[in-house]
Image (cartoon, rainbow, N blue to C red; front, top):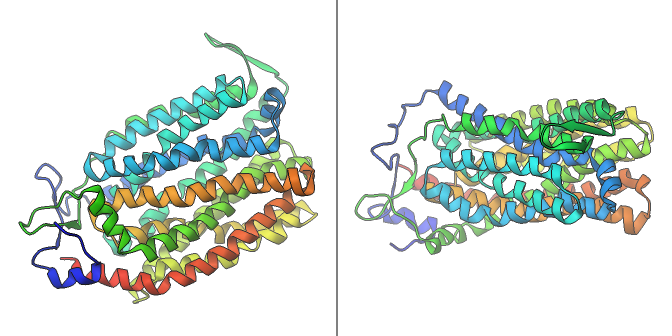
Length: 467
């Protein structure tokens, strides 16, 4: 079956249309109550939270890891960014196809189990290379979550409530990052006077290694929890001339993406810069407070963790609520408008990270984090509602591939490069982070604004095809 431009598809409704179901074994449309749909979002959000704890815990362990493994800031930046992003981004593409063609719940459950084990394996790293490989394993497991979760949630909710639902799911970014700081800081402070810990079977290990073991264990239980979810019936499927759901080839999937390339590429590029801001801050803010203000990991974790969790979740929920409200009022680019507003507010990180008084820094971080968090869920929703069901897992993976390959790599690495090669001192880490975030915020605002017009066209075309 040929796949054509969405605008031209509206005239071929006899051949191409959408319907709600795919499998007689799947639950019927409307079978899931709103309460159960939100329950599923909470389960997936918990997994996302754990994924960010496992991903971000390294940022609080920079000092002992550098000491024990003799690493530079640049190598630490590679461990936090490239080591994780390498497989997280590339494996997302085939895993996204699995999410579009197989049981999504099982895919996510296996992924949670895999990354939790890989996190625990980080405890046994004896060199930069072995820790790099273990971090790659964390990325492999976490690559299953986003394509599966986005597709599942899009089938649990109508598009008018999808912005808020995906924003609640995406709160896991800030819950996980915040908890990693709070829990990790507390553990490090608690074990600071204990150079090593004796464990059964494993023997004597350094306290930072014990931290990796500690944060990996909850994921084993989360994997079992995900396995109890019910797979929803797929909605908005592209149908062939015989009225049956089309099994799109890879070429046809890319055709569906290609005819919407302005929206897909624009949103992805904007999120490269947003995620660059996020990862620059979360990767190096703990080091900033410890190096410049001589705070302990516990002080750093408590202060930053609370701000990231409370302000990040509030900003994300507000962003999703605004997008849903604006969309109902006829603002077609509502989800992207949230991104533009967010990028402007994110510039508050510049004075925050260059202030000399840590109290001023913390005060400015409150609104800065609120604005930074706003578009994470809405951009996910923006792509889900302009593409058919058979493409949603794959577009999620492609989206993550693009913005993480840029943002997750550049975010931790750019401040490290400024530290090592421009300022040539680790005490200027606050200025390095401020410069990195300033660049990212300005570019994100420009790109979001440029995508308004093509996105309106693609959303209107998709609306015309829904039945």
